[in-house]
Length: 78
Length: 347
Ligand code: SF4
Image (tube, rainbow over all chains, first blue to last red; front, side, top):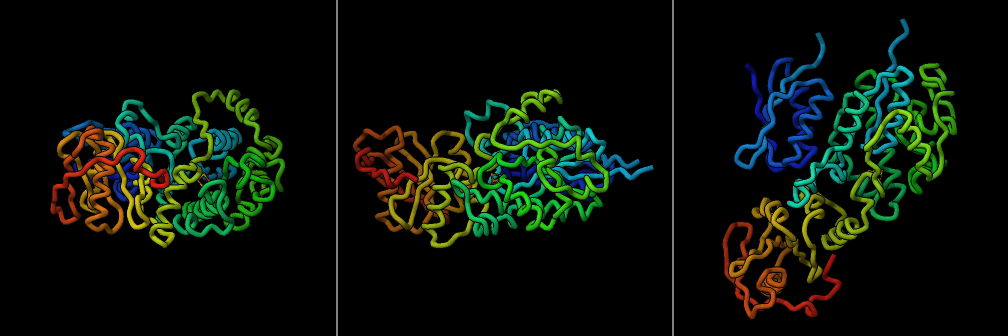
């Protein structure tokens, strides 16, 4: 499966959300985006953004002081 | 079948934009939200920095509003373009460095570009006549509509009945009779409408939606411009103004001293961009130095930083000075005493 990794380290919210949003625009349904972040705010903001815009949250976790959020693209256009 | 009309709502995260969007949904309009990120927004940032704030789960209110409404939210980064608004506002500043009227005009003009690119029909905002002394007055409403270029594509559902008819009303896309006629500073009509729609737990920002309405913040920004002799800023500058204690012992340099561990960690991220001081002999803060400093300046800075360390009442505190190349030098200094720190140093 296609997975795009974006480096959002040192960016503060809502910049990581904007990065995910931009990445989503150019990806097809089913593709995944993994955002690696240092602002803990992403654990609530990226899932909220995904819910609102209809994308699927795969996981949101902390790992070695970093925050990893994975989103699966769903543009909702069948 | 009649065409489904679409409106873009400017969503700040406050109650008014929430209600304005809801009023449109009641009339069968498809609404999507736009939230502009200027770099000065109160949302985000600070909770990532101060350790004590991390415990409190802080939500992004614009996202929360969108979720309440069940609409999509597009967060738009306008940091670069927004600089011209902050640096040279045609209509001037408000009580602090908030260029609210120019800001509104700019955001509506950006929203206009946005709707044109996406085949949306009009723009809505949560503005209310008389709600804010600078940007939301009867006289400024047409200024925003005209100067943004949006003209009659800009509808304010909460006070539309006090304003001339807009295109969506004329065309019958929305029913003017079901729009509102709020005016003045009172929040009661909004609260009643919120209760009617069943909204609870909404954000009520006191001063405004961004740091530029904050007096302390504005003083620091003005100091930065004065010290550099140039009204300019970068993203890092405006972030750093939100963190730590800022002291300027001389016109050509200032210190940003962490107040707690969370701020220390955040400032550490800047250690390759700024010379900095850390305490060695005692636990203490991390301080970034912004400006070109001489050996005497560094000595003074070290004495000041020692003052905020746990060795403040000792005869001598050892500190390490590190320049941006990473070269380190040790300094032994006597901490400054409170009476040796003039009030004017504190920004
Ligand atoms: S408070 Fe800030 S974001 Fe809100 S209108 Fe004024 S300048 Fe713009």
